[in-house]
Length: 193
Image (cartoon, rainbow, N blue to C red; front, side, top):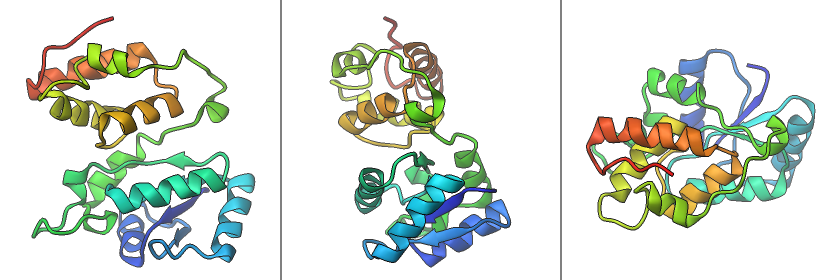
């Protein structure tokens, strides 16, 4: 893999190396991202690309957002929370994921509009409600299943909307994923625009 991969900790880096083989991986040490590491990430983003793999928890999202604000052109990989939980269920991180779950997540690397050159119409919260992804008790289950299918991870409705617009996911892609998620979970009736 040519791109630099950024994770939170050493255990995450070791798990990714086991799953992906030889790759350059830099860890932020949680919130301890130094100026030198940030400069290195910027240079790597400009020269060969950077893939962000923070943990699927609140702290991981904060680190991801911080990097996104400070470095242009990052690509993102999201790991489902269920795949990232330790055996006791009291911790979460890439370090606990099996190699196949990591490889599956990397098959769905998300690109920004600048990287794809496409600009579909932005979606709104009313679209999520129409598809059953927000506004009802079953929405969370359907949104999580849809997010896994689209490679967006598991998140609340506001974050889901941010991610689908950030990565320019089309209405057709979302509708297909919602219908597939409904078939898998029976969480909600599939909606169409």
